[in-house]
Amino acid sequence: MDLVLRGARIADGTGAPLFTADVGVESGRIADIGLGLTGTRVIDADGLVLAPGFVDMHSHSDLQLLAAPDHLAKVSQGVTTEVLGQDGLSYAPVDDATLAALREQLAGWNDDPPGFDWNWRSVGEYLDRLDRGVAVNAAYLVPQGTVRMLAVGFDDRPATESELDRMRELVATGLDEGAVGMSSGLTYTPGMYASDDELVALCEVVGARGGYYSPHHRSYGAGALEAFAEMVEVCRRAKCPLHLAHATMNFSVNKGRAPDLLRLLDAALDDGADITLDTYPYLPGATYLSALLPSWAAEGGIDATLARLADPGTRERIRAEIEETGSDGAHGVPIDWECIEINGVRKAENAHLVGLSVAESARRAGVPAARLYFDVLVSERLGTSCLMHVGHEENVQAMMRHRTHTGGSDGLLVGDRPHPRAWGTFPRYLARYVRELGVLDLADCVAHLTGRAARRLRLTDRGLVKPGYAADLVLFDPDTVADTATFDNPRQQAAGIPYVFVNGVAAIDDGRPTGALAGRSLRRSA
Image 1 (cartoon, rainbow, N blue to C red):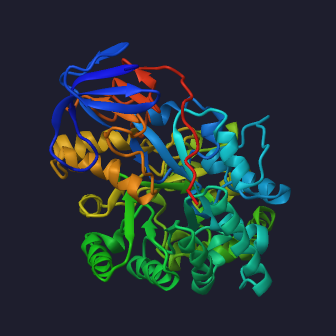
Image 2 (spheres, rainbow, N blue to C red; image 1 turned 60 degrees about the horizontal axis):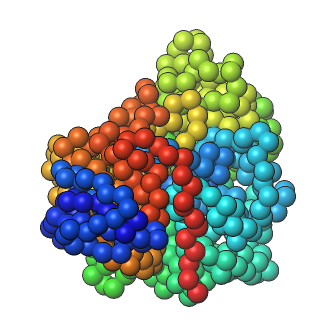
């Protein structure tokens, strides 16, 4: 064998009880599982748990995985595969004009690195770029908002029949080039302008090609349960599998209401629906600050939005909707500025705002909170990120117990103080929710984060510790594994994860990053 991991307790990704054995790796694959195996390199894994590499079902590494391909944030927590193209907004397929708009719109999520080589336009070309060398494996979802931007633009109107045909063609081509499904961001422009009939038409293409639909649906606040039900119905009509992104019930209106959602999902599952979901093990969410704007205020793109913010009458109309009635961009809930924390800016002159709520920054400046919010958006050309402190622990725990649950970080890697979930999601599951609270059993939790996710992606040779499978593996100490990333200091390598292998190559070796780039794109099979 090239490598033998000797005497590990194996959590094989199925949820079965742990067992002790040696695992032999050869040519990037698991060659044998047994006792007394020998190899060129032998690692003593006594006292450690060996699991399949973790699968991040909801990642926003689309750009940073290429800009910084060693990708320490993910490999250091045991992630060996992540799913890109989330929330209906990513960088393929594009034309030149759409790419320019996306680079501005998504700067708060992904930055816009100077001098970066944007040498792709199609989904296939983007996947080819990943294959040049990245630290982890990556699958891709065709982003419905980007597709609508290409075919319809930023207008809030129904697509014409020819535009709908164009969107169907773009989705089909993306899937044929290797995407595993389609995502939507139905509180983000322009994807949120799509009707259910339009979504059904696109999901029919996805389902027919063996992909799945992953929506960030229309509300996680007021009307959240109805928004989940809407997505279940869309996929029922389209005969398309459904994967619910960061599935939880947030904001004060939904405290303790996760059981209502689970009853809805269980009824659909019992009726034959194909549904899975992912969550992250934290309470706050994260997005770009301008996402809170009502959809009509964001219609037409960034310059049109900034023009509205420059008009006093329009600005007041926006303020009233955000603060008094609740905008669709803010999930239909009136915003409490104490809960909105600016965590990333692009201009040095705004650095003093980072780490403070909008309310606190406004108090220090002696201005109304809405005025500070608008002024920051204008100053930053909307390129600002924020944390939203709107979650509930009982909802988080209820969702992660569900029979279809998988793990997703939803992690943004850029900004002054990004959400720590980008660095800590997977060790936090193992430390807080397995070892400390006992919400999940260790073997079951590993299955959530590996085998169950791989089944949703239809990966027939990943997600399990099994002969013939790719050697995407993580060794961790169940007694010391922990997330060390915090909201104050988020870019911290996890503790208790000494070894991570991607396609048989060590990405973390004795606790140290190797810089290996053994990952590749994982493309949907025809």
